[in-house]
Image 1 (cartoon, chains in turn purple, brown):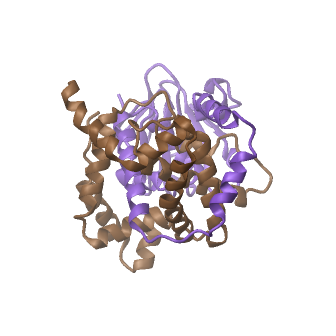
Image 2 (image 1 turned 45 degrees about the horizontal axis):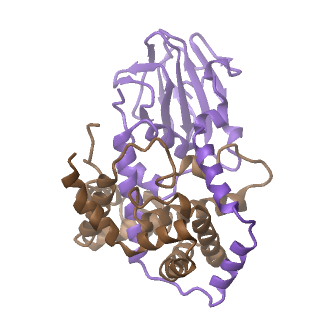
Length: 217
Length: 199
């Protein structure tokens, strides 16, 4: 049961198309599993359409419609139908599988310390500045206590973790910042895997303070 | 849900002339209908591009959006979204795509824009009923008229100028908290915040 949802303000920035790709991915993965948020985004998309309609308009040049028609006419017959079919079948594959393949557990994880493994996937998102990491906390394992220097957007991809704020299950969405000093524990019998987008490195607060560790970074 | 509940919304949905025209384009490749859509939405999309700081590419964006409308019109389902909403999502995605192409050096990303930002009606896993969609479109349209200008201004900057809440705050010279509370008040009235919160 999902109990942690993206805030309506973030959903609006998503609907407006203003989020970076890694952030949009976190939202997309949540939306695909959450009817409530998904329907809020539908409403927000309508809001976007109505905003566009209520703004001033700018005349388009006189020959433009003709050039659009000639572009359409130059396409082979049936092309548009094919485009649609391709679009539909391509959409059936989850963006997560496109990015990481089917099995999250067999990725080239790097063991950090104790129960924590990480995989930096920032290079899958060329041309943007945020760090994107997958983090894995072994079933029943604990991550060291830490706080966050910047903002960390996280979605749970597998399993669940708990901290003082509650239990975060698969597809739960959470944003952590400077005020969140937490000590997550993996709950349930599966390893907990999360996808996080980090706007700044994390600060360790506990005994492991001097070690670098993205579960916590 | 009874059939009786559905009828008025469907009838109302049918009254939307743009959706009817788009259905004609999708079903019969009707060029007159396509031209009418172009005359109505073309100037809106051009303004959208200009407001987004793409003055040099505004006409290119309009063209890309309309070619895309033609190509995928056979997927358009008026029970899933009004034509205006459907076209807005295409314009938004083409804008994102165009910016991506301009920014990208050589590396390609495995995920496409439309894997992240969906066009309504193109997915199998859409649980929301058509009734719900049509109702919410009408509700947004009606309640937007009653919002104070300071709220619509902020929303317009987010949607039309792709500004973050922080950028809007800087531009209007007001605290970030004020921007956020204006948006929250507006989304509350548009019932975005509370709707289906418990699903």
